[in-house]
Length: 91
Image (cartoon, rainbow, N blue to C red):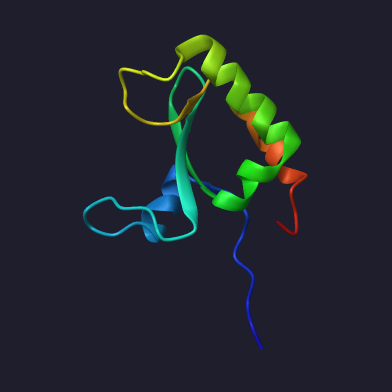
């Protein structure tokens, strides 16, 4: 018998997934979304999804590969990100 973790975690929940040093657990990736730079911890399986790849392309166009924050930042509204990733159930 197993349990299923929610597929997307907001920063308030993500702290439960991180260690005291702020590391992200194996198999997950931290991304920052929108102008408010909200932190989400997502499964790396999202990287294979075409709609997520479109978001990454937008990030590349806006920031290039040398972003001053040093983290993966996606320039879209939080609600757009949640709507996009909510369709990834089963990833």
